[in-house]
Image (tube, rainbow over all chains, first blue to last red; front, side, top):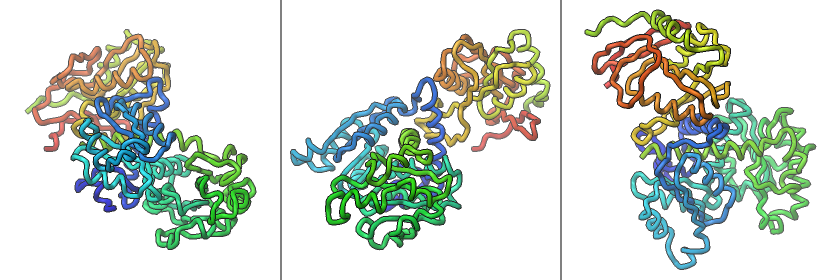
Length: 317
Length: 167
């Protein structure tokens, strides 16, 4: 997972695979560029011609309508041609290997692959084998990384809090299985957040997570105390009845973000969630729809951030 | 050695003189970042235009994206007045190849369909690569090959200067 796979010797972004090791200037470049695209999305004609004539393949080995849709909208607003492939059920079932699939698509003159895969490292493998000038964007790989989600969260935090270097940020819930949390932690550390916390039961926090420079809290009120930013994570359905937590209801009582628990954070704290939310599990409706919530702006900014990533990549042919 | 550059204030006066009889309070004045926006601000004030001043960022419509990628541009297009049906004067500092104007027109059209667009430039240095002609010109300025005309702004004092293009 060498970071040099995504940034070339001249410091240009050639693939976006992870926020880990992504230089701070590159993160700022992406966020600044995204600001331009936020304004594109507010005008009469929501389309610019930068990627005219380019073909972007959304290659999803794992289903995700939401993420795929936001990448599709972003690519279309840049005037690219978008081809959506849900490979999960077709090629792999016929025995085709990952790289065979990619080489076939490359032979169809793809300029960029947006890849979602259940296995960590799959987008890296593809990035190592595509032709020069072909770019890969990781749209989520296993528990490893989801860099565009991490970056859109950084955009959202910067939009509301301006500066990262005085912030207290808590990530609450199932950090263990969350590629989003990993991407957020790397980006937040790079951007200089001094007090970064993870909050959750022992069974849902990775061992040794302190090594990433975060403080671990099992007590939710202690973890939320004085926070500027509270990020709740989705509790996957399949984890709700298993050995890791007693029950979804029990989890909600202890770690679900309620107005009462949120009161321990700063009065102007923002609440984020990568979606889709489980109302009444990791977040209560009163918080999700409340005045602290920036969950819908996250979705809007996500389009602009994905436009920025694709426009920067395609410009570095 | 090229002739000395004309005084920038004179060029601004020349533009105002040309534009005054054929613009009105409803005319939209829109400057292209960066230099064009400074010139537009001066014209907007001198002409007593009521429509709020606009600025255009042309990065997203530039035609050299395929060669040099995305320019880092913090400034964004800001058009506080409706474009649809308006009489607009597009303002730039230096007119050269005409490519910036082409990009600016595309950017403008993303906001609506103006009734008319005219072009005002502080200095025209020739060298057109597109069929673009200004309606109002401060002056035609000769510049030696390898030199660039640059407008600077020091405490609201605009000054046009010829500088060697970096190799």
